[in-house]
Image (tube, rainbow, N blue to C red; front, top):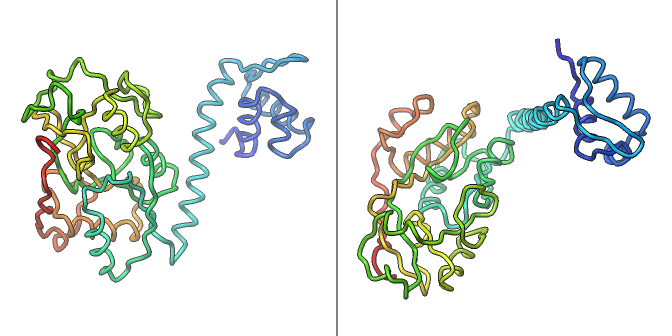
Length: 310
């Protein structure tokens, strides 16, 4: 038996976030007495007190904190289910691909060209995301597929195909003491200042940056260095030097999509991407292998290196 209706949960979350019945009622466009009655009905049905009320203050009980946390996720899931159901019924829906600007390793044009040959090809809308929101867009239904970099992006709940594997390089100011080296190890960089990516809690201690362009400016000014996949700094910007970091874990450029999404719209694009760039047999996911005919091994394009001075 379901104890709560979606509307009741929405009412409670609004009150819990505002901690004020008047503001919550205004946000929901309902009368305040009706909102108060709905929240009391939820408390009665669950058998627990969710809010502590006084004439001047509203606060959450431990039960209220728990319901707010899980309620937000539940409302997000309902919204995503509605969006996905609508899209599944749209016979002419566009395919939405989210990428980081400059983060396709030069492969996207080939993927799109191959996909255009598919008999069921649709228009592809290219969406540009930041350092942290591309995965979120897949989970909440705002995008169908994404180009992600592992191990940086979290693939939990996502199916994926690896399209490109590359090494990482240290990006240094030209006058940095390590800039003349032909290669580095991670221990050479352990005392260096690394940037903090906006929205990422476990980043470095240096200046906060939102994208690669901002980071490059900070590197040129000598405020930080960075270690990134080789393709993200090709061509090499003026004023910096790229040096290979030989023991840094390789970066994998992957095409990812929600593991529960089995729509032909997505499967067709995945197949085209695999054929265009050649699959890595050791990286194919068990539940998302393309047909044998789509596994013709085509070598990824050879691209100029980013080693030594740029």
